[in-house]
Image 1: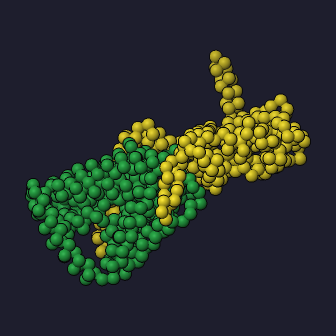
Image 2 (image 1 turned 180 degrees about the vertical axis):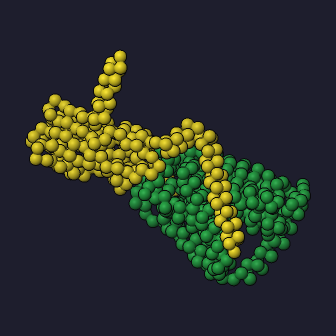
Image 3 (image 1 turned 90 degrees about the vertical axis):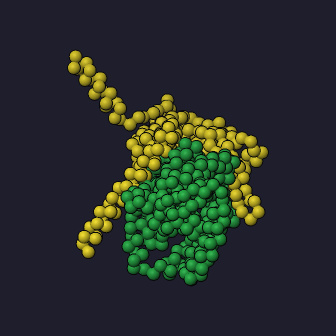
Length: 256
Length: 303
């Protein structure tokens, strides 16, 4: 009886402890050194490494991207001598982060139509983003991409893939400390003669932990309760620091 | 070292936030000026969204004013009747200010209101402190003049009632309206309003200083607490971790500032601080005049 329960349990633990490996039929594989990132109070970012085998003679594109969401940004416009708010611009289909690594420049590896279809690189990301309620959507998209690139959240420059002698590849991605929780996808594409010859991908999950997770959840789902918690935390901190200051003062007085 | 601000959705250097709290507390302890109006613009200049900086600054003031309130409560320096009227106005003003931010944020103008309010406030406060530091005699004469004129004006408002602890007889409408204005300032700018309420109560209402300080702190705790809850409810813009870090810094800074105030010359320090406040105002104004690097900016909506 114990064996019947224990063996499957041990087998499950072994399988679960080995980082996931994905592969396609052409021998293209992808392994992440971790499939899960935990963000706690003092998280300062991390680096993840993607590696695997690939068909010899093919080019490689590895892209890490977040789930596409709707988001709004404040548009600045000139009013008199000042640059002030000129309304909010709503974007749809915006991944929080898109980082690309490749063995060559993307426009030389694949035609633009293919990049757009697969949501790859700058053309693919821009193609997936929609702007509502504005006629100058091209300008808005360009500004959004520029903003994200300046913050290091979009990187379409490519490069950064190391090919080892045994035909394996590896590349790394810097994960910023302010990464929002959710699932991110790392996809690898092998390219031969301007055509995709293989695709495989892995999911990278980002979770928030402890106080960060608790406060974030409460602020969204129970804002009044969160407000009360914020006040109580402030009052508590004020009283504790006050007590500390009072003790110091008393000690100082007795010493003098 | 990094500190994740869960609501702001950004990562900051905790030592930098502690330093901002420390500096604000230091100024408060050394010069007697409220730390709130220096804390929020410093957070804005280091890249925190203005809406979140103001709301979290209000939260920090709750903690920073709690200890003082308890001390003054024990010493009987709080005029409860006056305090309740002030905080009733504060809650109303805080609600109105929070709603204003909500409406303006939806239109993309909340940031402008906060920044313009600070450019104006810092310019006025900096200029006043600069003049004050240059000549304390001029200040005394000006204050004596404003006392007699304002006090006579306010006493004309009908429906007077006696405030025993403060030793004044005045319409309850006066503290209520003062409180309302302070509430709006707290919601829009993340300040406690002491820089406005203390001179108003001292010179315009002729209330003894010990009661002014105690009652101001009393109303500040409750007004800023209500604004914090309303900001969390309506705008989801309070970052408790940011507030908490600022409180710790401010408490330490206030002690250091108070210790330094016994040794250093007040007028020279006031001049130095005035120049710093004026520089901050000029920097914020310059940011609005410069062509922005990008036409898009944060809408202040927490992720």
